[in-house]
Image 1 (cartoon, rainbow, N blue to C red):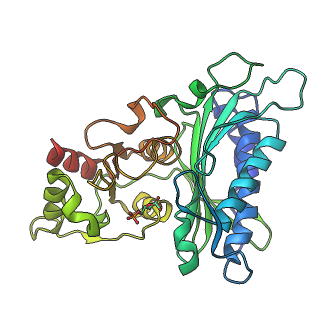
Image 2: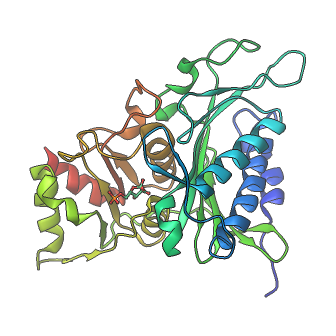
Length: 332
Ligand code: P6P
């Protein structure tokens, strides 16, 4: 296969001027994500071979069993982001509180904070199902040179300067946006290089796939129940196909490419839904909207929500614009 496409490195240099803050730091930030993604990919791909499977025994801040790979991925991303002297703070699903990065430069003028879900869907690792990393980037709002505060992390999603995900699937892809559309890069593991494989991704305005855990049906709000019945009705372009991997990143990525809607609504078990606003829903909503799709909590855009807590959960409806519109009609 002759590789004609740009590498990620070439793409970043070629589009350097597109970054609103073209100080080059954002490029270095994306590059550090690229490196950590390769390191994690290497471990994820051999998870079945070495004794890295199974819970490490500890539980994360939410009391969920912490797979060893969760811990590994968390450390890999925190290390690469810290070493590159770019960020002044990191929040992670695996860390109860945010991490203050002092930096070694005399005046710690690092501009960015990163919020990350280092390995989402990790409960699928033991059964060899795709998992993913999700990241979200903001400029700090507190004064440069001071210690980052919670305020820097609780910004609405519409203030993101970049967001993306890595899907560790049949191939490993990095998909991200810096506010000028969405581009997808596929890793050639033989040489450890990402190539631009999906330029300017656009979510089809309409799709015929709905992704939701119907096992929770009896706990759903009536609007969601009605929308599911609408998807299953024999009329017009329906019934739709149901596809649910149980791992947000591959479910989201499939809908990005083919069109579709992913829904994790509030239920009586999870009154605010299950997905986290800051490092799952906001970055995915940013990417969805940059690709011409839509993301809401059933009533308003995810990106307009004002966060109040680091690990807060929100209901999540995301994907093809017309499908999210229709689901919102049923939620009214
Ligand atoms: P359920 C994985 O734990 C996750 O956070 C997402 O990746 C996934 O879409 C969702 O939860 C699955 O949750 O309740 O359907 O198993």
